[in-house]
Length: 190
Image 1: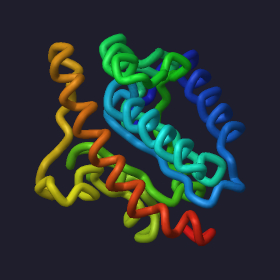
Image 2: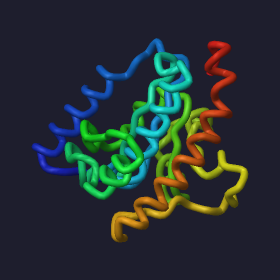
Image 3: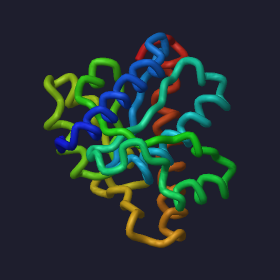
Image 4: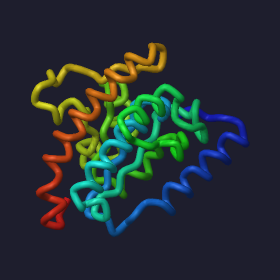
């Protein structure tokens, strides 16, 4: 993880406290989506999975959050193109604020979902145990129509059309992920 100024470290500490306070320990399944800066892909996936859980009546049994591997956008809202792509499909992520993943969160999570192999390597390196490393999974690994070698591309340096394409990939893969975790959630196990 990057080290920053005292102000940046204080903000990261505040984000950690915020995460701890908002993290529902009674939820039966806890997932965190992690991308690079927590302003494009991971807020999309967080928003999509929250809606899937809510619409299925399982919203109270699933805690969904997101973070980034880097600290560049801590405290910032999601990228405006992310918000526009989500809004065009009826989602709302206007309250999102970027935060950096903290390895201490592994103990509180059942699944850490990443978007590319670089993030997968980073998170597995941050994991202290084999059990924590096994929680790190590529999002597209849940979608049987995708090659397990495919990454969800980072749309940050692209146009709005790429954000729409990425959201489509995320919606499809999140639906597949949700289908896989639903039986365990319904049975009360994770």
